[in-house]
Length: 212
Image 1 (cartoon, rainbow, N blue to C red):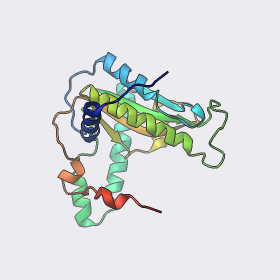
Image 2: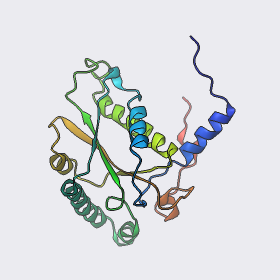
Image 3: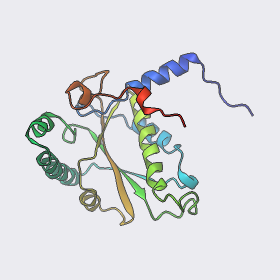
Image 4: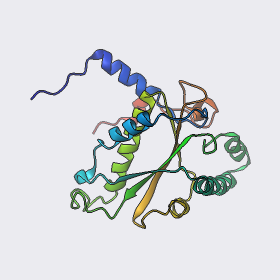
């Protein structure tokens, strides 16, 4: 059986998708079509995982009280993060919009089930963190799939994982990897927001490759 062929036109479109993925913090209130969300989640579940363990667990957070608890955790953590910078950098930090928690129509908490028996431990004896890395591959696949539907995704990491887990009442062995805001972007930009607002430039890719 031969595999599919991906031609030059496909590669060009794929490069465009990757380039326009973007971390979105500003969302329109339009609802996310259920079919688009489910299709993106299904593609995420095709991602590679160590030992085929498939440790990702996606939790859609719709309850207003649970969302409010997550938003409150962000507020506390965001204030603490700003306080850790010196005056000039703290001022720049506070000027950034770092989450779309109040605007995004869909919230997804993504956990790693660290107690899963799937995969029978294969590939984890020397690198147990591979379970969490596997979840990250699913998050990135979801991100690209959602973008192909015109949706934006924002990864909120300025949170206390224990507070989020408690607010969502998940099993003790589930470790928070990402909290995602999903919806249609309120604006489109070719450059990352942190570049646009002067926080951090992108590295020259040539400096990121080494030969040994």
